[in-house]
Image (cartoon, rainbow, N blue to C red):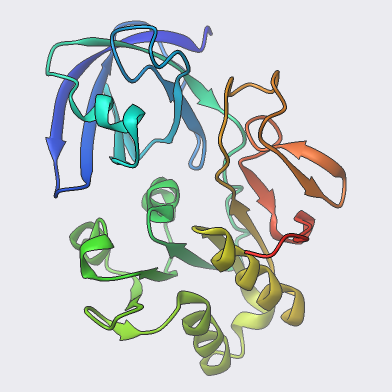
Length: 260
């Protein structure tokens, strides 16, 4: 099935000053996405900016694909201005998704900031008890809290400034969880998405304890399907493209050489 399609904007709802929920209605047949995959979306009605922007999908319904996006620059500012009824070009789903955990594994989801958007479709897919550790700079940066609480799993929230939940970084919360539940060291599968310093810290914890898991990386992309090589990252298998071989990689595959 062709992964290029047009979609009508059904709603573009502001959630707060920085984040919008974009509900799109595909006008062509589409492929069902897997949790962790992403889409390239035209953000305006002109050729400036020329390039589409990559977005993880939040969820799908029988007739919609929904995205939660944060306004960070000109492209997302144009996207915020998209009106109900307008039509955009979309390519996707693209990339690899999160492999589901084995039957005897307990999923531990570790999200930092907007990384929760990529992980949310996975969380809604999981059918067993699991842990969600979610950190952000402050209360205003936390997304989907009510949705996460509704799902009724073991949710721990932390903020850098202690404006909501526990004080501190989410990797420290992961260390506490593993210390309090020794059985997780042999039975958990980690899933992580967030800022690079957080992912690097989670990778370090996984390496120390021999934990298995997967993380989704975020990189700037020009094409989204592997042609431009602009999103390549170093792995134990050599350089790989976040858009094609990723964005989800086994945690142990990522080579962290840079300082973040």
